[in-house]
Amino acid sequence: MPGQVHERRGRQLASSLVLVAAFWLGPVGTHADDKVTVSITIKDHLFDPAELHAPPGQAIAIHVKNLNPIVSEFESDALHFEKIVPAGSEAVVYVRPQQPGRYNFFDDFHHETQGFLVVP
Image (spheres, rainbow, N blue to C red):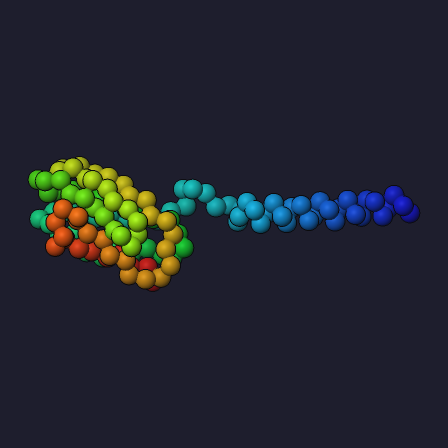
């Protein structure tokens, strides 16, 4: 009987450790590659499209293509990024998962160039 008690306590301890590890490691099956990719171009000092859409709670990769003959700075105070995109070049900006809302972004060198990330 004493052996059965120790064996049962050992299984309970192992189960508890598995639960603690699952809590600390997060959900099983999530990877750094689990992100939404959206694309935008800058041309004639306009964003195309002017609104990007992404689901809530998921990381976002924004591919930016600058078709202007001059440099642009793709920036957002609300989303905490800024990226220089030389004329005729491309860049990628990574955004952390967002809660539902409407987040402004702009070309810091040409403030009339405005757009939004919409998270429903």
